[in-house]
Length: 319
Image (cartoon, rainbow, N blue to C red):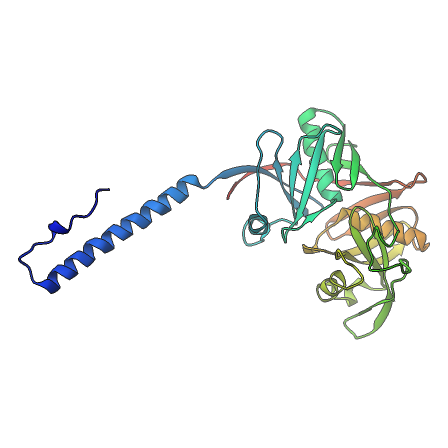
């Protein structure tokens, strides 16, 4: 676009008409300039290939960083995770690793990084096992190396590792009885219960065993407990109802994500805390709204989690 020449204004028209004419030219120029900028922005908008998967409704957007490095800002992760946009509980990045088949980084829907994600790890394990045409795989996370195997077409088992009960590793504010933090929660009828079993299974968790899940509003309880001063790094909150020694029904509030349809590490935390309190067996089914996760806390102290994963869906994301 050429420069605007002032001599293009007729010198014989009135001063007022000249101003109007000149203003009109400038307005047209600015409009074209803005359109040009917007066109450039559209041109540089990047399309990223990603994968969408879920484990019992606990859903993820997965980026493969092994060949091409993809960096997303906190705001971009929040935008992608928004249910009004694409929507997911966590965003996962797969990276090259010398000690395992891949290194995984996890981000909650609030953009904050977390150390582990059980269902997310199972989903990535499934994706990579299909790629490598192998029924076994190892994945490294901040919480350690996780070994996974494919039991049948969509049933994936993974070794989550050992639970940690040390107050400074959970972490808690100070040394206290992690089996009963004496936290108060109330049901919708105003009845109080005191409890809270806290432990770390890759992420900090607190579990409350209640008589009737329907009587508790986790959307109200969850954020209060997640942000309680007992937990310097916040925590995941689970309400659990023991149906029998082999089956426990749960609802989960994830730190940084909110209410979720399923959570693998919460299932592990529930099974372990219930076993210690002698409420359930060491091998137990944890029931979510969309299905079961089998948790087996073996005698070697390792926790094995088994459950279904969805098919892999390839998507494109504009950032």
